[in-house]
Image 1 (cartoon, helix red, strand yellow):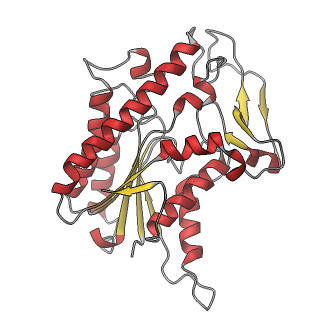
Image 2 (spheres, one colour; image 1 turned 60 degrees about the vertical axis):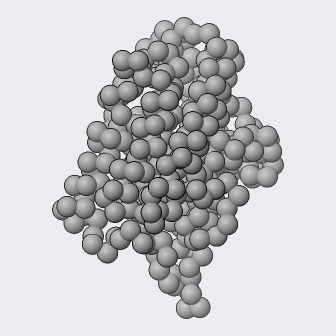
Length: 306
């Protein structure tokens, strides 16, 4: 039984700096799992403990793509090792009762990474994906056995990467928005297929490992195509506009204050996106319910066990 959830990644998984206007998906996953484990006395039989290491702005490695934030290999994994050593992660956290998750790639391929030629050396999406896949082996060699590897979402649907995208708080540079849209479609689709092939190739050699490939791309594509099945707010369903939007002018300093628009109350749950780059809280609830199924050992339509 999984009673520990240990998360890695970027702003999509960060529980400290939250980018959806509410609770992040790992905390919702904990709520859903605990609610499913309530006994006859109304108390949770075994609660799920969360050990979060994901940080906003993260890339897989700063040897491949630049980032001033806590990357997976340079910061997040060392933080895990330090927590194990100093007892922040107790000895009761064992390979058998822990699930390690990784959701990364958005910044590697994004507007400050591969999409705009900001790679380091000659790094390509092959390298950034290989880096993320290597995370499984890195933790396996330290004793971990249960993994959920979440692939990249269809970022071309994010407001920031739409063909008619406006300058926003993430970037105001002059760009060919159509080229960004098409480039992001290629990077995420190709990167995910590379990841699938790499994982299928080497996971069978990891004796005793349980590795699930969670198809975030397919889930988010389905939300985009069929919002009525996932979004439940009181406004018209919207998979294009963000709940919280700030419109800048080209080349404007993003530290300047501009008028922002925020959708309030239950209308928010009709939106797929929180801002120009991040999923909404309702979208993250949807994601959390799927991952809760994985944690509970139930069949999940978006997860393939390799």
